[in-house]
Length: 273
Image (cartoon, rainbow, N blue to C red; front, side):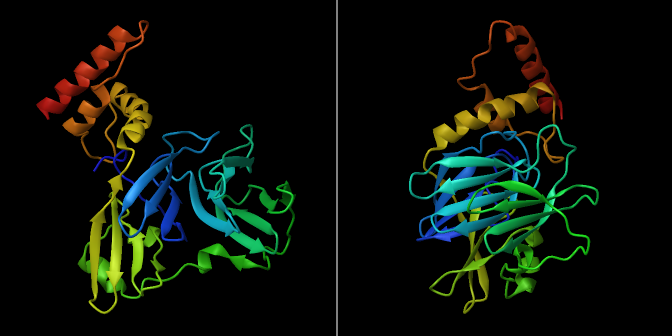
């Protein structure tokens, strides 16, 4: 499956039977009704690259707000469940050298971002004032709850091997009130359900409610990959992706000949392979 077809996440927030998450494979916010797998593309996170992997990793809920915490992105994005708005709080300036928050610690009203890169700054976000400051800690230890240590462990890890679920260590599972556990297939477009009594995992395809809107959003990203002759994660782009990209695609006057040539060359190489 091509990365532009995948809908999955590392972590999600379950609220009143709905899962909210930042997509793993490109910049996108999704809502999934867990009972029916009906999925809505809610939009994208502003001020971030649209085709970036792992824009966010962890998330944190505060009352009616969901805070999506960056990994390769530069911002904390706050989604309001009341008015469905998204605001962005800059954690890494565009002028700064690239670094990734690797651990997030919750200390009262503060979120502390510990970078993966040793020389990068430690940042603190106050959840009341929404101010970001640098944190100085010479002991390399912080009090508070480490988000990476608060996620549930899957109760039957041997099942993940049995079902050959790739990258299963990159996702989190949550147990629902009825006792079942759910997660999202890492390299797919499916909801996973684990039933403890039956010792099995069921895969349910996500039903995209606004498929046309999502397709329109993804089309420029697919076109970018086609024009540059990219192969996605060592897999050839499928004819269905070419069809989705070319269908209803309108070239600009300046780039018309160039785009036609690139698309034609890519299709030719695809057919030859």
